[in-house]
Image (tube, rainbow, N blue to C red):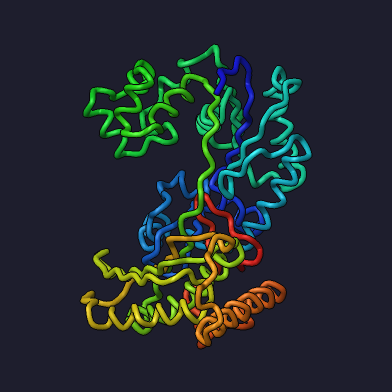
Length: 415
């Protein structure tokens, strides 16, 4: 930890990335109110909206039906995650013509470290980053660039100048630029944390600034409160690396699939994708969890636990057993969504050798693991699910491949 006296971090934050990406890739959408949806359905919520749609009052999360009511000629595009990942790679290459990308925080957020020689002209470096993106990608895909003594303040600077802005928050200006913000405008303060702070008499950023660091830790209930306080005061903090906790996929089901049979067919597809990611990243799993939800967000949860496993046949067999339980216990009026998760992970290299590794059962399990790895390689090579265990369902409603999560960008092999 140290307290910089210069601008050391540059944060790039793209504006309405999925929507801007579609306008960039499809010129006929430029200047039009449009939104990006996860599947083709009148009831789904928008995951991104263009600036033109925002100006009309359409927001992220608005349903397609409500967006049509606001603007009858609103255009809807089904998300194409594989296309956005390729575009993300082009963006990284454009930024790195100016300076290296230090960390990728999400599909549309990156942070760069400024070298000592670049810090005095940091705003100029920020303009060069924006110019490089416009020149190499195009003017439609805009971003905001923030500069600060640490990553948090650089991110806040980018947020303060959205869209298409450039701003520096300098150490000697603190806390001035922060005082106009609400508590939830600070990255890392969710509504729950804000409510806890307000109950303790900390209702403004000015009051938060005036706390002692140990008091911030007490109010948060953990060290994150103290870390956030230090970062707001301009200190540069190195956060410990996190270890992956799970692999999972979920899907809202199309109308004709909202039965246990439809949920099972979809869950098999989702589990196969999660298991492939598990193997590729070098893990085994000791637990499979299944969630089913109905239209009222009530639902059913089941879990199976087992010895460290990574082959598709064993995991699909566990899934089948979970659905047998669901058939007896699930009472919902249809199934609206299904989620599968592999958790309690163990790195493959840490799995202890089976004491009975020469039994027929152990030999079959190793063979199934080998075949699952072969299937992964063939599917990656031919960019599709060419080889799989049992039936493979094509799920209606549009794109059903890997999804971009806030903190995870799929690999090319996921698609």
